[in-house]
Length: 211
Image 1: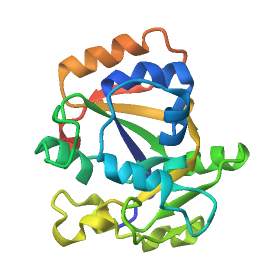
Image 2: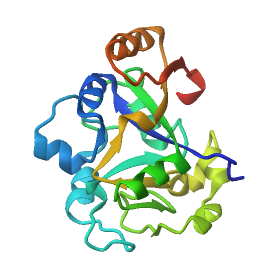
Image 3: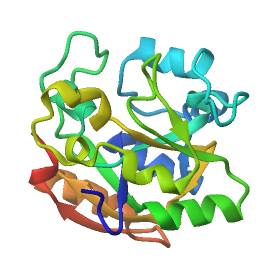
């Protein structure tokens, strides 16, 4: 069932948090590359490249997936599971403990994107695959497979669990409401990084967001 107030989640290595705060928010992969920003890259390089150079949105045919900041509609994503099992296709082999979740409100994010001229869509499934549908019509939100999105064990619904919200180019730090971490060590690291930040999302140890 679709939540009354859907949240969106971006996962990132803890060593990118300072850069995100300094930059004033999240940046698309294309912007990160253009600016030469550091930090540990997670995900599959081949899929990241496909998102940057091949995959465009049907809603905005001149906009590549990799030119958008991606979010899932759930924590405990399929990608996090791949990190947890240290999948052979991942160049990152550090497991899940150094990965943090950044949570924002979907409707608040859409309002901000509209005011700031950022194109946005949500997808029916993994936007790194060659077959996905995208839309910016909120009436289609109910058509997402929310049972798969919310499932702890997704089985055959893996692709639909990976439905994404994509926001063009950047996403302001002020929209991040909460940071979920898996360990006390990550909690302390995140707290130290945010010590000098003006906007301080609450930080919580959320083991149920992890494997």
